[in-house]
Image (cartoon, rainbow, N blue to C red; front, side, top):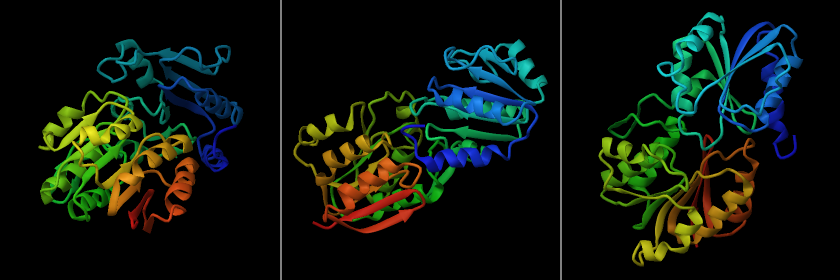
Length: 330
């Protein structure tokens, strides 16, 4: 268990005890990491009457000699009901499965959308997504990112892995927050939070938004265009450190940042690096915000404590669910 917060392991073990002791459990694993194999073994250890139907694209993660595991493989581009082989879809439909687990890597783009479509097709009544920190998310959490959401007068249909109140908070900061500099986002995914920030800037006439992600996001420009903010957002497919080093060049000397939104990798090393490369660009009165600030992501909490709270440069600390914000004071 080295490297994982013990609280998250306990959360998994606690929730595991509430699962049915018999019958099939569908496990969709798009991640090759070892926690998929660990979860599978724990499910089988806690009840001899369970059996697992594994739908995976990685052949190296599962014990192959356990008769209680049925394993089927899918192509990474063919997870949806419409593209799975008909015979495999029929097997899944006839299995009687009512509980599903899902594991993914943080960079897996198709994950939430495709698994939701499959679960609806199979009429699975309960689903939990197991992230890389062993946190179990409910089916509502899993499907929530697909639901349209509102910020201000705008209806947004692009997925976002934030609570509605957090998206509203970002929108309001972009629209009404102090300062004259740019809004910078680290961590883009499909662009949901970038759209919320851009709509706030657009409604107040204060662009631009700069969003940074080293992983190419193929749907981003389409999603931005659909919400009328394509011209407001600049996308850099680079590391945040690379952009920070060249920030003056990219912005033609106008380096002030009035709102910095950090939602990159949640390790201490990454969160600290993002903070140290960017915090001094935040202008006095400007805001810095972090996603997933809490016990499940101790690296983020540590980075905030060491490099924001103890720095003496920030005050007015706030929490909006798992979102942390602070204002630059000097």
